Amino acid sequence: MDSYRTEEEQIEVIKQWWKENGSAIVVGLAIALTGVFGYKAWNNYQDAQAAEASALFQDVINVVNKGQFGTLSEDDLSTFNHLLGKLKTDFSSSTYAQFAALLRAQQGVKDEDLEKAQQELQWVLDQKPEENIELLAQLRLARVIFAQDAENAQQALDLINNVDAKAYLMSYEHAKGDFYVALNKLSEAREAYTKAIAAGEKAEQVDPTIQVKLDNIAVAKEGA
Image (cartoon, rainbow, N blue to C red; front, top):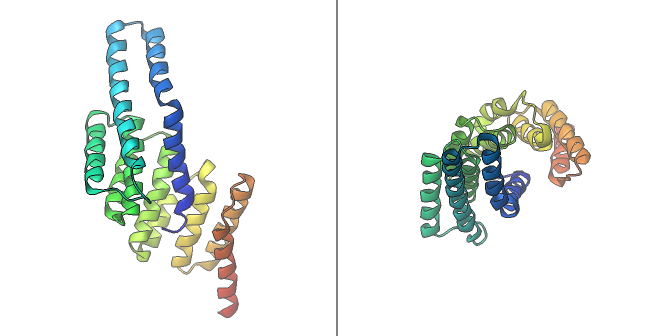
């Protein structure tokens, strides 16, 4: 999928963040609960829940990391689905489950199973996640819907229009530009790409493909 590189890098940040901070979070949660509630039974229960969820997510990361060039064997994909199902069933409101679903959606895109990717992204949004996860899932869902059929451009655009994208501004405007091009709204596309480039420069994130697309619009208009 075009322009997926930036979102994939964001998923890699999730994986790296977990590698560096996962165990510390579990310990920190236990300490915090002990200090706030002071109830041994409650602390033990919450600690056990957090530890189990984090262990399941670590297993997910291990499976994902086994993939060669983004592909997973049938057995590994089956294991992935099993772990994700358990996280969804037992820890549906946890960030672990939401992160795992994002990774499963990413795998769906790599496998060209866009229906599965859409299903997982919609599940994440249905959980009412924290803002950064919601923004990422919403953008990816729009991209997946558009990738299924370019005629879905308006539906995809409606998903991300009038959204305060914050740190995802470059990616959001880039996507808008692509959707506008598919709708043959070249003036709006040019504006979106220009905003994406400006946001990227401000965040020191350069995506040369956006400039290429902006230049292509200018050529198209000259030849019109």
